Amino acid sequence: MALFGKKTEEKEENKNDVLRQKDVREKKNPSDASIKENADINSYNVLIEPWVTEKAHEKMSMNKYIFRVGDNSVKNSIKKAIEKLYNVSVIKVNIVNIPKKKRVSGRHIGWKAGYKKAIVTLKEGNKIELFKGV
Image 1 (cartoon, rainbow, N blue to C red):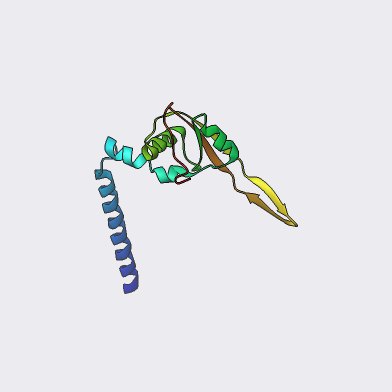
Image 2: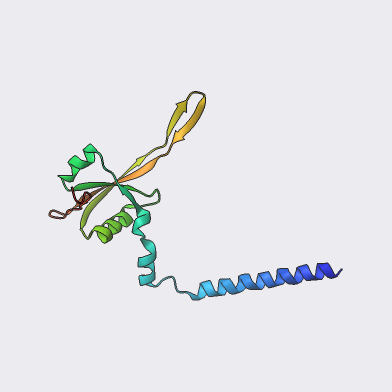
């Protein structure tokens, strides 16, 4: 009988710990603008890599740069990330979702992962240096 009493005491202690953690979370003020600004954007999670192809290189002459971005990224967060990392002003952001594709190798069927690209148009006179030392 003593074993049953110990387990219920442990459960009550765990419940009290959970309630204390909730109180701590509620005391924090998430509406503070400075906290939101920093939490909203983590540039390295938004921008994965620059998209370097012949076509992308041609677009650079028109002040358009192409980046592979995270699947949950939206235009506003992409714009803020580009402006923060490269110190340029962005005029427009266009997004292209590339769907996943089926690939068959013999009798095995697999999928090539889909991804998201962003075409970023910069203000006249701004430039992003993707190739340093070339």
